[in-house]
Image 1 (tube, rainbow, N blue to C red):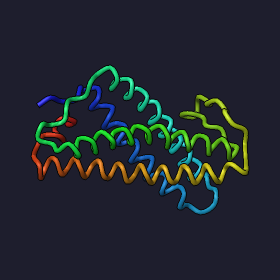
Image 2 (cartoon, rainbow, N blue to C red; image 1 turned 90 degrees about the horizontal axis):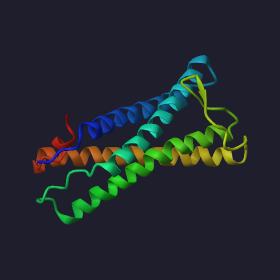
Image 3 (cartoon, one colour; image 1 turned 180 degrees about the vertical axis):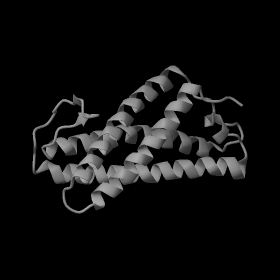
Amino acid sequence: MQRYTHTAMLLHWLIALLIIAAFGLGLIMTDMPGITPTKLKYFSWHKWLGVTVLGLAALRLLWRRANVPPPHPASMAVWQKKAADGMHVALYILMFAVPLSGYFYTLAAGFPVVYLGLVELPVLIAPNPELKPILKEVHYILTMTMAAAVLAHALAALKHHFIDRDGVLKRMLP
């Protein structure tokens, strides 16, 4: 059985944990009433997680282009191979689209993104009250799409591990 490289595994699991953390934090902070120091701190952390995911996703994409992933098991049906490939493409797109939509939403709302409280990211658009609600909705829809895709991806991996027993999950486990 061919496995993913250790770098691919590290990036996969690190990005997965950061996405889960950002999603959970996003749910918590948006449910908090008013504007409090804690809520503002959570918003900053959420943005930092998003910027980190974006950077690591770029590294992961570069790594994947330079290091061919292991082939699907021969026992996998053709439709499952196509579905797996399509899911990977969707997840890569979402790893870029979700943080970028949040970044542009933040800028449209008139707030800078200061990574780790140290590095102010470029302001690519001016505050825009008309664009703000659109970008907020786009960010929400993309986030929920990513949550569904991550869940489907995890369930498919578990199905391959416990039902098909074809080693698909083991290829990504350290």
